[in-house]
Image (cartoon, rainbow, N blue to C red):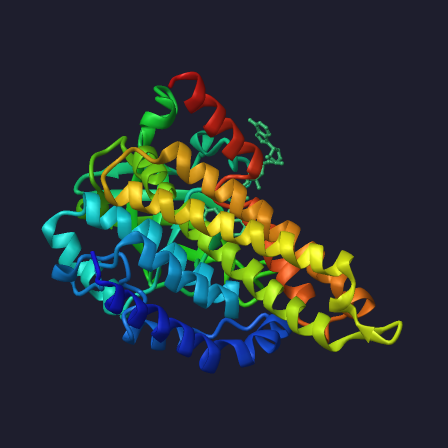
Length: 381
Ligand SMILES: Cc1cc2nc3c(=O)[nH]c(=O)nc-3n(C[C@H](O)[C@H](O)[C@H](O)COP(=O)(O)OP(=O)(O)OC[C@H]3O[C@@H](n4cnc5c(N)ncnc54)[C@H](O)[C@@H]3O)c2cc1C
């Protein structure tokens, strides 16, 4: 647990970096779909690719609240950068910390934490999104090696990462075991047979790299399997607990920036001879936006505390993801309304925030799937 001063220093570092090195360029990266790897590398040198990694593995060892606050700052500048480092910190890092052997931690976790390797996570397939356990990519044992074949879809960092955590089936077609037939492999992206597809042309988060992956006879030594055979789906769900909190911080960052822009704009924009901030209907909109953002942040920090205390937080991380993402979508919609016609134009910043907000309701489990998780947990409570 960091002291309040240490926490402030980390958040301040993230804020300053985001203000100087990310925000001024975010609109251009968005327009050109440019993934600025050099910025990710700089963030890595400052420790932001090892935020959740224990200090003994060269990470910052941040508590989850501090991690979320830092991610919120990056996200307020550009959520595309936040998702690239958020995935790395939340899912591959969590998987290696929890299930990596000492040798795997030395080989991958330590350089990941130092920012020398960027990682991603590939669970989804074209026919297996919400129903991820129905995935079909296959690994077959061949002596001391595993051979991976199949295709993954929409993986963040797939075309820019140095290694990907890939979920594939290790049960055989004549003896399927459902989720228990899935295992996780650490796949360096320069392995023969790994091919990232052309990056997706997305509505938002356009500076992030999202791509399908082809696996054509990817041969891996057995020590590239993470943890136990057949446990990959469980590890993926554990990773998503951390991931969904990260998406919550991303959503809060997007919403906060939309509110900040709205406050400034409403002070400047004059209609009927006065600033539009003087109309009560406008004031009420700003008040509601601020209240919902505060509620989303408070919920996510409360759940972060429970996670660090070792509680089972699966239902609660779904609540965070659900509430924060719907808040971001609602707040950015209000922001466009407050900007009027200008809000609809690319020259103004809020339409990007609106586009970036939308995906937070979709990835790492749609809002409907979060409600399924919450309702199921309530039934069993
Ligand atoms: C920008 C981006 C980045 C991504 N990054 C990654 C990544 O890094 N790694 C990765 O593995 N995946 C990634 N994904 C994939 C993402 O996680 C999936 O898109 C998401 O889980 C939804 O799956 P789907 O798109 O197949 O939708 P579907 O599962 O086909 O859902 C379609 C609709 O049906 C609804 N639905 C489905 N099942 C139910 C149900 N049981 N009850 C009620 N409604 C239901 C859904 O809520 C949705 O509205 C990314 C996606 C995007 C867009």
